[in-house]
Amino acid sequence: MNYNELSKSEMETQLAKLNVAYTTYVNMNLKLDMSRGKPGEDQLALSSDMLTILDESDYMSPSGIDCRNYGGLEGIPEMKALFAAILDISPDEIIVGGNSSLAMMFDNVAVNMSHGVWDGEPWMRQGHVKFLCPSPGYDRHFAICEYFHIEMIPVPMTQDGPEMDIVEDLVAADPMIKGMWCVPIFSNPEGIIYSDETVYRLAALKPAAKDFRLYWDNAYCIHHFRGSRPVIPNILRECEKAGTPHMPLIFTSFSKISMAGAGVAAMASSVSTCKYIRKRFFVQTIGPDKLSQLRHVHFFKNYEGVMTHMDKIAEIIRTKFATVLNTLKNELEGLGIAAWNEPDGGYFISFDTLDGCAKRTVALCKEAGVTMTGAGATFPYGQDPRDRNIRIAPTYPSVPELDTAIKVFCLAVKIAALEKKLTL
Image (cartoon, rainbow, N blue to C red; front, side, top):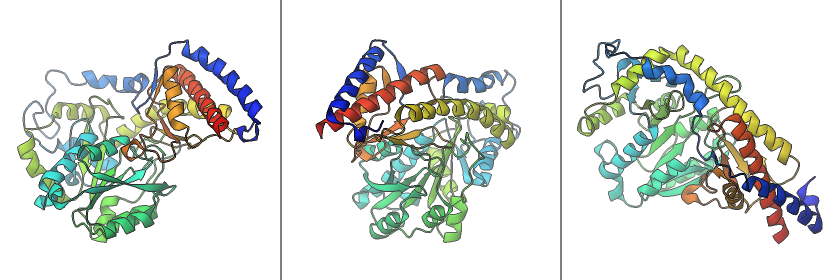
């Protein structure tokens, strides 16, 4: 059945049947959550041994650092080496932080606003600061911009990454464009992997602003659950070749690898940039949580240990994504009212309703006890110009919960679509 081929009376009949089924779910008093890309309990359990891996006498790092004490502002060497292996860069290009890479991104934007890049003119004194925001994109990136009153300029996404003709023209023309958000591998929410050509063109940008920075959020670089780990050109090395070695600020973390509330994050950039940031850390902190870093080092041991762990995570996530994708196909394929991606990694499925139906769909889900990411969240200012994109996050619920939640979601999509069509 294709909804586009139904008569008005047929649509009304179909809608009445769907509303009966919907009322059944409403009366079940469900409390299901698909709003964020949080690890589920089954995934977190894989790292439980980390909680007891240190005993009362185990506080010295292999390199001889007493992890109970102050110091080690950039992280213990073993943790830096682990991140370096994941990002394929040098340990002296790494600074280790707490559990949140988002906090490190926020901190860098804040410092650039108040003190400038490399002690240059503060962004806030230069005028109206702007960032390029590939969209659909990550709502937390957009929230940072809103917090600092940074104007967000949406850039369309293609299957190769941001639309580079637009990016190149914008950054070359406007010196107040100071940054760009990038999720280069399994982008949030569309699961897109930047093409080699996109990475080369980003590295070769000629911004009008000499203090322009690429915020390279590589959160999902090893989060593949189908096929092999994707490999794209190293943005740091490509920027070096292009004569822009300080332009990229790379971020990643173990928050979705070990424990979201007790992971370890890192940022990476040129050696000179890292040295500059360490000077700020002498004012900002006395030292990070090195015991958490030590737990990670003992638990994972090396890059191979991390990847073995990622294989276990992949088994869990693959099953959950399959549950969602199979239901979407069985319930919605051929109706002419929806489209979605089928990613090979990451944490999200990007779903498009008919134009003008996303908010209604999410509202119907909420009324039936299924919490989704807010409609519009994947666009700057929460404003999806077509009101159609919804981010589905399958990882947190159990498989039985997920099975129910996605069936409610599909029902809401159908109801919203028929309601919309009956008003046309």
